[in-house]
Amino acid sequence: MAQIKKIGILSSGGDAPGMNAAIRAVARKAIQMGIEPVGVIGGYKGLVDEDLKPLSSCDVSNIVNRGGTALYTARCLEFQTEEGMNRAIATCKRNNIDAIVAIGGDGTFRGATDLAVHGIPTVGVTGTIDNDITATDYTVGFDTAMNTVVELVDKLRDTCESHSRINVIEVMGRHCGQIALCAGIASGAIATIIPEVPFDEAEILNRIKTAREDGKRGMIVMVSEGVFVKDGQGNEIPYGEVITNKICEMGLDAKFVRPAHIVRGGTPTLRDRLTATKMGVKAVELIAEGKSNLVVIENDGKIESLDILFALTADRMYKGKLKDGDLDKFSAEDIKAMEAISEKRRAEIAELYAIANDVAH
Ligand code: ATP
Image (cartoon, rainbow, N blue to C red; front, top):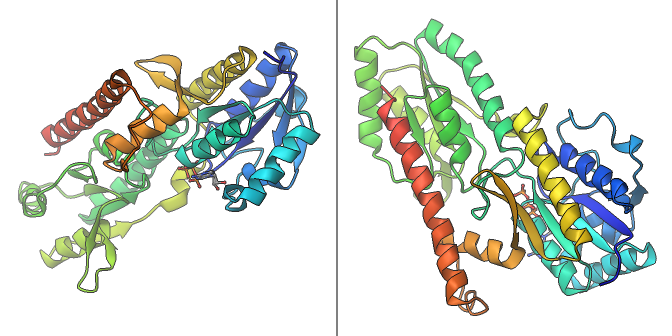
């Protein structure tokens, strides 16, 4: 096994609070182990364009407390072309980068496996607010995003209560409703609507009507951005807008709020800083052990790692997106483990959804 002397660190895809804590942890742990860390600016684009910055311990000072990513991020289509990949590999070779730690979401990990296939050892660290990578219980940024939603809703509730109004809040999460679900419970929503669980619109509208008749003035309806309905032309209409109109049609005052990217920014919570730090340290340890093509995950509170392809395939299995041949590379035992991961996530969502309804009104 060739000794690892220099590692590149990059953040890619959507930014997430806690990415900086991961960058700092990777850089500091590397230095502590005698490995030289180098920052890759703007995700995979920085590898394609050879935009690098050596990182000293001081360079990563005063970022643990900051949202966003000090190494910046970008969506880089060029990296997905043969020419882009060749340039990225050439950057690693020219600069003696022996391995890469890539912080991001599933797209970032797909890029990491491509690098590994081309001979650059890679380890991924989860950084995405959506918590939408099924093989890990937790992705860095999720806690901060949920707390930001709760803070916003607490402010909206004051106005809702004063004006006897219903606020419908659409929150990020793409196809994953976890931010909406957890923040819905924590902010006292009367209804939470997520893509993973079918819902009964008439029952929700009736719940709101009954609550108003019982004397409830302000109400919050939390909707995940992944819930749509199709109009006559087949266009997807965000469901939050649809239900807002339906509540108004019942003669109630309802307003739609889309905090959008506000939920992505801000000071990372302790949970995100701590998890990012643990994951960053683990990533460097794995690389120093000569491991590659792994993603660092959290499983029942423990920091562990999984083969990236296994993790991405488990994710596709849960999301019902498996393509022909996806499972061919895996043993029966692996497939059973993937099924268990999907089942764990389904059970977690079902339990939270039931709790949300138990306390809705
Ligand atoms: P988030 O979900 O938080 O937005 P992400 O990592 O999924 O994070 P993407 O935009 O999907 O975000 O991916 C980030 C980058 O990873 C892309 O811009 C691209 O450079 C690379 N990438 C994405 N998908 C692939 C792929 N299939 N093969 C190689 N590289 C990829």
